[in-house]
Image (tube, rainbow, N blue to C red; front, side):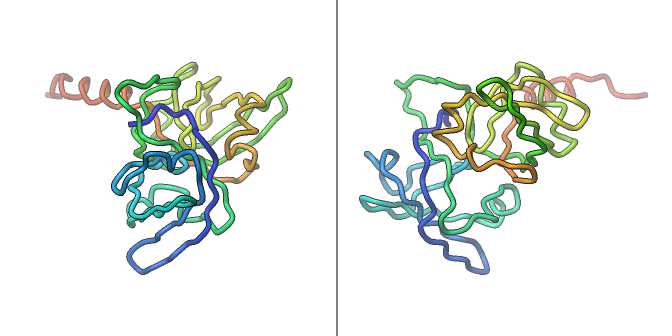
Amino acid sequence: MFSGIVEEVGTIAALDKRPGGITLTIRARKVLRQTQIGDSIAVNGACLTVVRFDEQAFDIDMAPETLRKTSLNQCDVGDDVNLERSLMANGRVGGHFVQGHIDSTAEVVEMAPDGEGVLATFRPPAELMRYIVPKGYVAIDGMSLTVVDTGPDWFSISFIPHTREVTVVKDYESGHLVNLEVDILGKYVEKLLEAHRPATP
């Protein structure tokens, strides 16, 4: 479980592609403090397991399902990624409860200036739009964000300058794919309603 507050931006130092998956080596500093083998770190929002680490970097393995569901299958050496360690029970939740279970990717449609910030528009798969509501939460590349508005096939997010400076938002442009996790609460409500819906005669 994560809070959606990015701790640092790491850099992909090496990439080992195999027929059954990919291993990423990610250079980092802050998230390596007190890290142990088997710990979970969110990499662009995807909850992944540390399989090796030293003082400068850590390795994570990505299974085929991770590659199918996320944008991490398009990453390359030198790319930056958002990093967050899993929550501690006595820590603050600055964003919302983020599972690190990516639902799908979404496409950046537009990055439009909005005062000192940027208003970004994203297009997710159509089946996920029912879980995205104005002023509700989504996690994009592991960042806990508030939805500004929605349309039939899009939603918008307002990024303040600080977020752009300290996360991978600085790399966003039209056509870029991001990892999207919708708020789990909407899914649970939908499931409960379906279970109590009267059977059609």
